[in-house]
Amino acid sequence: MSDYAITIAGLEKYYGSFKALYGVNLNVNRGEILGFLGPNGAGKTTTIRCILDQIRPQKGTIQVFGINPQVNPSLVHEFTGYLPGELRLEDNFRVDQQLKYFSKLRGNQFDWSYVEELAHRLNLDLIRSIKNLSSGNKQKVGLVQALMHKPDLLLLDEPTAGLDPLMQQEVYKLLREAQSEGATVFFSSHIISEVEALAERVAIIRGGKIVKESTPELLTEMAIRRVKIRFLEPIQEDLFNAIEGVTLVSSRNGLEVTIQVEGDLDRLIKTLASYPVKDLVTASRSLEDIFLKYYESDPGEVT
Amino acid sequence: MIVELIYTLRRNRGQIFGWSLGLVLYSALMSSMYSDIALIDFDAFLGYYPEDMLAFFGESFSAINSPHGYLDLYFFGYMTIIVGIFSVGAGAKLIVKDEEDGLLDLILAYPKSRSAVFWGRVFGYILTVMSILIVAWLSWAIPSGSSGLNLTAGELLKPFWGLLGQLLLFGSFALLLSMLLPAARIASMITGGLLVGNYLLIGLANINQDLKSIVEYTPLHIYQGGYAILGINWDNLMIVLGGVLLFLLLAWWRFLLRDLRVAGEGGWKLMENFSLRKKK
Image (cartoon, rainbow over all chains, first blue to last red; front, side, top):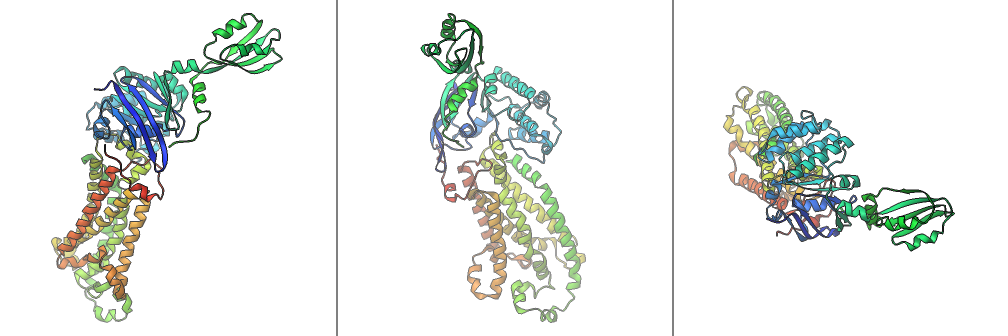
């Protein structure tokens, strides 16, 4: 068996003459939660659909727990729970009928009481008609069907889309519980706070290529932050140019200065120690900064 | 496969009920009128009709006061078009409707092969069409004695085989087109047009002999209609069923090899649809 839950190497996918994936390389460790971050159209869904063999790449290989999904898709699907990005359900069914249909597709090989437990935790009414459900409640049905057989691999395309903040927290809890039971979670998102809250590792995809792979902590360490300093008396603005990683953004008569700092604040603080500082405000670093850094010159959308 | 078969039947239950009810009411009305029509001297009556109109409807017009001519003119002749519209729509939507809606994405992420999904649905579709025809057959067979048709259930069953063959032929062709064309509605529209066109062409060929050579190669040309009561042409029926099988196999092959579409994806890029996925 492979050490990785998912191995993707040199994945290229064209839609007609349009190139959607430009050689995606990505390894997902067993038992980890990996956030697949990217804006709409970056290639997240295309990658997930290739993993499930719903579409075939022109180049590259994929292995899921050492199995090629193109050779044995049913086996891969057997231990995978999938939530599509655009979830559609059968409007003429009730929630329980829809879930029982999905359960039959898996050969009824699991405990229905777990479905009831999941529905209870997500506050989902099992006897309501699908057509009367809000988009958030439909998303809950999608989550229940992905989790109900306790899969080894969860492929979730924007798992909390349409859910209120309380339910989002419950979903994070459910996914962490799944991980603690040994599941690997691969989820795509364009919501940075979600990735920060849940992922152990992040892969950023841009224009069909992985541009960064790291932990959320390391990524935020690298993020640029803004610092506003007020001085008791005017200072020489060019002192900031001498500090590595610091860029002056604006200054008001040398009394109120805004700077950008890349990396940690140690050198800045030590330099400021010899000046009369009245106040210092620093914006909290977030993954959003690094995300925007990678996307500020997005070349265009990918399907 | 069984799960998909039941799922298809369940989804079509409203269609089965609606179409069956309509056919029961129509058959009841038409069979109640036969005893009166059988007594009319149609030779004198038909003399008042324009020759072209009589030619358009073919020989069944002159045989209207016989059970097979009456059934052909008032039931089997029309049903290829009427139930055919349902069959074509159901065939075109069988797989691709869910694909266009984005539901197939999820279904095919379950441990069921594409073949199981395809054939489960195809058998569900065939059973749906058969269910409607069985109800129609019963609604003619049960009052057959009292209506004056005096045909046995077995005799009445014969023309239904030909009708079933034609409905499945056009339905399976719509299914095949839905795999090749970018949208189910385009497949349905084209096949429906071919069905209606074929029906009109058969009638027009009775008026214009030049059209006969074209009509000979169309499916409805070998459709017996009510005349199958006098004896089924098994060769023609096998040709039609062979065509059904061919279209289904081609559609299946195409479904196995192509990418699943995303909801809303598509366009008139027909040639791109022929590019095959590489098997690893």
